[in-house]
Image (cartoon, rainbow, N blue to C red; front, top):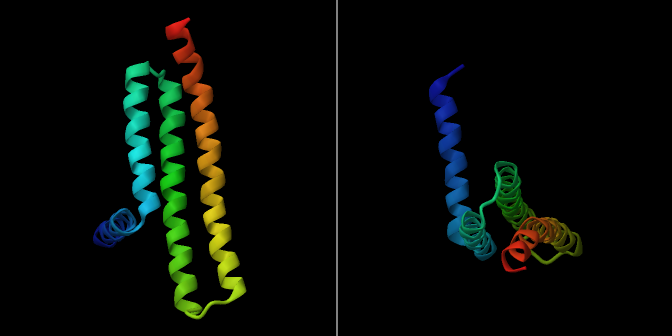
Length: 121
């Protein structure tokens, strides 16, 4: 195995993450949401297994945002003019992000709300 090639692949991957953060408003929104949830989790006292779920959800939404960005870029490259199929591909990719974000929010509510209710009642 060529170690230099391995490290180059990590560098390219991080460049993709930084590009997504720098260019995609929704990616930055999800990073902000993750920071808020992290603060709330720290203040709430999440268990180790709850933290694992939360981190898995962070990774999922960040990864899906980057896949969505990649799909948008590829579609724009191969179909610079408006085409219904290109729009459907982009909409489907954005829909995948939306569905995962909604599921993540529901899971977050299942984790956090009972803990908060126990604090006040």
